[in-house]
Structure formats: C-alpha cells, structure tokens
Length: 127
Image (cartoon, rainbow, N blue to C red; front, side, top):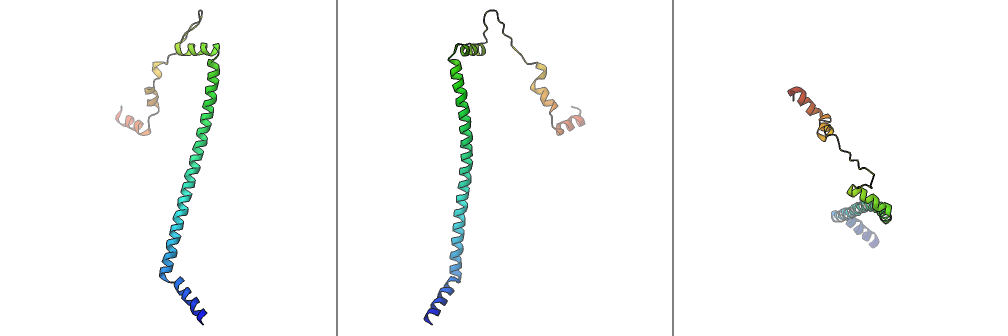
C-alpha cells in the first residue's frame, strides 16, 4: 500500500500546474537555445561562403599581380607601360587618340530610356 501511495504522490506532482509550468519553461528555454544555435550556424555558413569567394578573388588578383610583375621586369613590359601611361611612341610611329562623339553623350541616352510616366507627361503637356 505504501508503494502505491508513493507512486500516486509522484504522479500527482508530475501532473500538477507547477510541474507543467516548469516543463513549459524548460521547453521554451531549450527551443530558444536551439533557435539561437541554428541562427549562428546559418550566419557562419554565409560568412564561410563570403570568405571562400573573397579568397578566390584574392587568388585571381595575386595571379594578375604576379603576371604584371614578370611583365614589368622585362623590356617589353616597360615599353608597354610607358606607351600606355605617357602616350609616347617610337620614332616613326604615330599616336592615335579616340574621342567620343559629343552627340552620343549620356543625356541623349537618358531621353531614350525615360520611364513611362515621363513619356506620358511629355505627351500630355508637350514638353
């Protein structure tokens, strides 16, 4: 009989409102912890992707710099750099400068790509 009463007291305590509130608080606490861990995991994965992309960019930039360093170490590279930066030519050569046509400036392009609202205003008010 003593054993039955002990089991009944334990069962009564487990189904009491206090025990249920404690279990609910524990569930909320563990859920928030799991959600926080998931958010941190997602941020870490995003940061890892950004780092990998940045590492790829830096590797490509390093390769370009190595190529430029070997190019500038040669006479041909120095000549090419002088021609580009100083716009110089060897005797007997001519330098050609290409200048944009003023008729095709950015303003003309903007008129052609006006929004439908601007086109409606121009049509209604004759601008």
